[in-house]
Length: 188
Ligand SMILES: *[C@@H]1O[C@H](CO)[C@@H](O)[C@H](O)[C@H]1NC(C)=O
Ligand SMILES: *[C@@H]1O[C@H](CO)[C@@H](O)[C@H](O)[C@H]1NC(C)=O
Ligand SMILES: *[C@@H]1O[C@H](CO)[C@@H](O)[C@H](O)[C@H]1NC(C)=O
Ligand SMILES: *[C@@H]1O[C@H](CO)[C@@H](O)[C@H](O)[C@H]1NC(C)=O
Image (cartoon, rainbow, N blue to C red):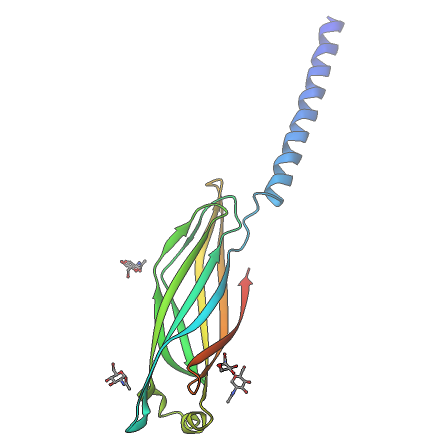
């Protein structure tokens, strides 16, 4: 009788220790490997795809920009994002937009999304700095992309994620080329 009670005690103690180990392992895994992480969007490149100007009216010009955005999903689970838009502003005025269609990225995968953005020069005329910029032949734009989505890990842990990228784009209409400086940010 005394023997079997001692055995029971030992079994209880071993079970308790095992349980504690399992809980610690699970919690550690959750906070390390499986913790939902923020996806990151970065703008890989901005290119000047085409530029046309009416010689009779220099304010009649059209600019087409190619913007390549990469979305990285660092999670051990999928990231699903909703429809979004890339906005292009010129000295604070919204001048063009391009849609990004909703999609999901598999675990630890990446997506490249390429967009074509058309800027119609006639829309820039209302900006008082436009003719001055035409004189210097340099037009500066800013593009911003925000993605809202959900990171899903092990089908259980879900985390809302917002990620943001913006670029300062400088177009030289004399040389027909463009440079860009981009930064990205994630919000928790
Ligand atoms: C710019 O685009 C507009 C609208 O598509 C068009 O009417 C205009 O002729 C174009 N101008 C030039 C210089 O290509
Ligand atoms: C997202 O955009 C696609 C294509 O434009 C459309 O078919 C779909 O209904 C949109 N989804 C939502 C949630 O608005
Ligand atoms: C346009 O951007 C370039 C490069 O960032 C900068 O050197 C220049 O001063 C900017 N021009 C204007 C008018 O803001
Ligand atoms: C555009 O091309 C010219 C001539 O090749 C070069 O000097 C200039 O640095 C380039 N500018 C940009 C913004 O790439």
